Length: 334
Image (cartoon, rainbow, N blue to C red):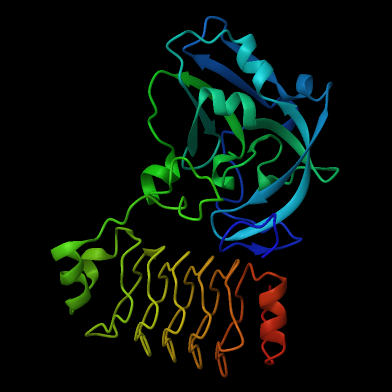
């Protein structure tokens, strides 16, 4: 493993699009973009992007996405956040920084104040080009040393707070609030399906009650469900090694960051499924329908079987996965 690449990450020279593709309809035009610094401060202020751009600086950082891809030494143009926070004169009660986006779902994320001072930049360009809207343009946060969900797109507001309310992905999907890529276990917090609840899930004959929630880090190795009608389950970061899912109807399911090594998915319906960051070494995908599936940072190996799989419209495949599929006669429309 390369010294710069954290555990279970896949290197890429691209920049996969992850999450929402653009800000909400009320976001200002790039020429009018501004954000506020407020909350537990004595000098709240509003800053215009055009003013920030008068004093550009350069940052090189390795980007590590929680979905499993990493890009070495990306170059961002922007300004460090620390001086703007200091100019707002944080009160002694200020302990956390909350970043709020102009996103359709009001995404936010938080960091301890000292970490935000040291690790965050406000960026408006990447590798010499203005940030594309899909990547958070015209202005986003970039945070060094953390998974990239701590780098908020389309910055709207910065709040200094006494307490940590947790961010959107931390609340909704149980992403780890510290988000350090290097320990290898800070993608998700502890699993949320254990004991009797886990046993009931594994033995169920209908899964409708679980279709609206997310199951995280469940130990499902060797699972053999009693029905093929599984539906759009969200099994994120789960251990599904050797699971028996041949012929399962899993259209719209979410297996992001799950370990499916050695699992049987032969003939499974995975149309529109999210397998970002899934580990598929030794999995049997023969005849599986992956039409429109999200496959960013999936990890195949020479033992993965894909004969007859349908991958038309699959998105996000990185260089290594594309080469693997092409060598087996499978070329998706990306």
